Structure formats: structure tokens, C-alpha cells
Amino acid sequence: MSIETIAKKQRNYFYQGETLSVDFRKKQLMKLKKTLIAHQDDIVEAVHKDFGKSSFETYVTEIQVVYDEINYMLKNLKKLAKPQKVRTPLLHFYSKSKIMHDPLGTVLIISPWNYPLALALTPLAGAIAAGNCAVIKPSEVSSHTSALISKIITENFDEQYLTVYEGEADTTQTLLKQGFDHCFFTGSTEVGKKIMQTASKTLTPVTLELGGKSPCVVTEDADIVKAACRIVWGKFVNAGQTCIAPDFVLVHESVKHRLILLIQEVLRRFYGEQPLENDDYARIITEKHFDRLVGLMDNESILHGGEYSRDTLSIAPTLVDDPDWDSQIMTEEIFGPLLPIIGYDSIVDTVHTLQDRPKPLAFYLFTESEVYKEFVMGSLSFGGGCINDTLIHFANLNMPFGGVGHSGMGNYHGKYSFDTFTHSKSVTEKTTLFDIPLRYPPYSSKVLDW
Ligand code: NAD
Image (tube, protein in one colour):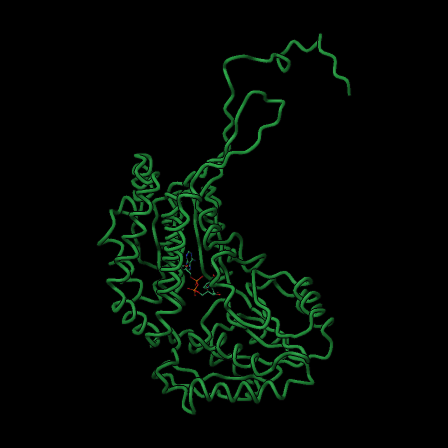
């Protein structure tokens, strides 16, 4: 079907009403899950072709998260979709009121390349659960996984209901102009601005899941051993190509040296002496990204790693010592396996420094101090984060996942996905058995006692 007609065709299908029933939605979610189970090996193979990633990492970071979201929806959908009865002010006597959770209609999901399956299909599960039709535009950069997503969806679903368009920026812009009822975008802050600009022409509401530089602070009283393990895991999974990876570490000067030694030890334990040859270590997605990352190391003091191979697009886990705040590595989102480590003396000054920067998608604090926990977490605005760990807040469907300010607007996961893809429609029903004419004109005879 041509791009120009897809939104209209899906809207016509939506108004036939089939997607409204909870049973229908559950059947589609089950079908999606069964299809994914049947294609699990193909998914592992496609992601491996795109990233050279291990099957374990692909299962945990790409496949399981989609199953979790689908399972949540299957378990909770009936309750989520049920109209909510609410009280009505006595003034409207006799009426009853309810909030209906209406599907939005047609939804456009635009996804990035870094977790190509999860970031396309997790929002899709929410869109299906909420009773919408959807178009997915996966990233052209992760071409093998995107082609597989297209195959899986088009072979199993009617295109009037769910479909996929592969393509680049121009395809996405053409899709956006078709006037969908909602656009759910995951990608960079720069492209997010362009999405919002185009969406404004048709007043298409947007959810923007964007990026940025997520800081990680380690205080002097932190459990440094645990901090080292958890920072290395969160930073170097997917070779740092994770939107919520710790972008840089700020560590109290008194424990900086020890943290660096421990991070080096953990890196050797996780990825061996030759990480470029380790099958558990992902590669960089494209030559363009590889060249950008290698460029970020220019003129920086490398504490560890720094090796790379353009033939295999691999860059070793690399620690960068005390870069300047206005250097390129500290002003652009790294999105790769380079970890700047900067010492600090005062937590108050550090918080002020972070307050002056764009609000990040994630923030991580390693400390044993209740005072620091309260002060730091309460003083900074960020999408979400952890105390004494990294990334794991993403995998809790009881919490919304999303950014704030430059890292995005809106959120999803679990109930929050359902809410993102529904409209809360308020309906009051009044009795016709009697009428109280107090509110009707003429008003001249009515005296208000203010
Ligand atoms: P990107 O913004 O370059 O691309 C995302 C999508 O937008 C792709 O499908 C792409 O084809 C499309 N696109 C690109 N240019 C466009 C344009 N001018 N008009 C319309 N569409 C366009 O992002 P990326 O490089 O694929 O992903 C990396 C970025 O995504 C990082 O900044 C990362 O932090 C962010 N990200 C955020 C989250 C999150 O949940 N907040 C998750 C993953 C990645």
C-alpha cells in the first residue's frame, strides 16, 4: 500500500470497530508473541548481523523485554480498558460520570537502530493493547533486524491493521505528513526536534523518547566494588550503544584511583585481555559511528583501552581521564564504549554543574549515604535512574520510562504505555426523568448570594 494512503486505510479499518474489543486485542498480542517465539533464532541471527552481538545479550536486551510488555498487557488489559466510574458534583444531580479509555486510532512508531527489535515492538505492544492500528518505521541503519521486523509483521497481520515501512528520513517525513493520531518516536534529540516540527503541521501529538548524556556520580562512601561492576555492565553492554548507558562518571577525588583500578579489573574479567576478539562484546553499528567515536578520543588522555579495528568496527572498552567539560567528548552524547572519568571535590558544586546541563534521560548515583541520596536525587531533574545500579529501572513495568526536557516528553511501559496510546474520554450521563431549571435564563429573577 502506498504511504500516501496508509493512514486513511488504517483509519477506515479502525472505524469498523474490530480493534475495540479486549478479546481482539488480546488475540493480536498472543499472535505477536507466538510469531516472535517462532522467529527467535532469526532475531538472534539478524541482530548478530547488525551488531555481532551474543545470543544471550540479544535475548535479554531485545527479546525478553518485548515478551515482558506483551505479558503485562495480556494480564492487565481487561482492568486497564474498563471505563472508570467517577463521582459527579451534586450540582449536576442526577448524573453519572465515567472516563472511557479510548484508543487514539492510528499510530506511527518510529524507532532507532540501537535496540532495533525492542524499541519497535515494545511500543507496538502498548499500541495494540490500547486498541490502535499502527505503522512501524524501523531504522534503516540496523537493516537486517528491520527487514525481519517487516517480514514478521507483514506475514502475520493485515496491513490495514499493522504494517511496516522501511526507509530513511524522507520515508519517515512522508509518513508523518499523513496525519496519524499519534507519533511515538525514539531517537536522537536533533531528529526529535524535526519530528515535532513536521508533526505540528497536522497537530499530531508526539511522544519523544530521546537521548543525551546520562551522568553517573560515585561518592566517597560508595561501595566501590559494586559500583565498578555495575557501571561496567551498564556502560559496555551493546558496546555502549544504549540510550540510558552512563555517559560519563563523576567520582570523588578520594576514591577515583581505586574506582579506576577496579573498573579495569572488571573489564578484564568481563571481556578478557583481547576484548576486540571477544564474542560477548558487540561491535559498532556503522563506519560513520565508528569514525565519530574514534574521533572523540583525539587529544584525550586514555587510561585504559583505546584500541580499535576498522575492519571489524570494534572499539575496546576505553576509559578517558578528566576530559574538559567543553571538549567534544563531554558535549555530545557518546553512544559508544568510551567512558570519561572526572574527579570532583564537592558534591554541591557537582550538582550545580549538572543542573546547568540539559536534563538527561538517566542518572545514576552510587553512595551509601542517605543524605546524599536525598540531596542529589531531589536536586536533579532527569528521566529516570538508579541508586547503586545502572539501567535496571528500564526493566520495571510498574514505572514510566521516558525523558524530560531535552531527553524527551511522554513515557511508556506497562500501564504508562496503555495511557500513552489512549485518550481519556470523559462522559457524563444525565437523567431525563426530571430537570432542575435553575441554570437556565432568564436570570433576572435569580439572586446569587455571593
Ligand atoms: P535517529 O534520531 O538518527 O533516528 C531515529 C529514527 O528517525 C530512525 O528510524 C530514522 O530513520 C529516523 N530519522 C532520521 N532522521 C530523520 C529525519 N530528518 N526526519 C524523520 N525521521 C528521521 O536516532 P538513532 O541514531 O537511530 O538512535 C540513536 C539515538 O536514539 C541516540 O540519541 C539515543 O540516545 C536515542 N535513543 C533513545 C532511546 C530512549 O528510549 N529515550 C532509546 C534508544 C535510543
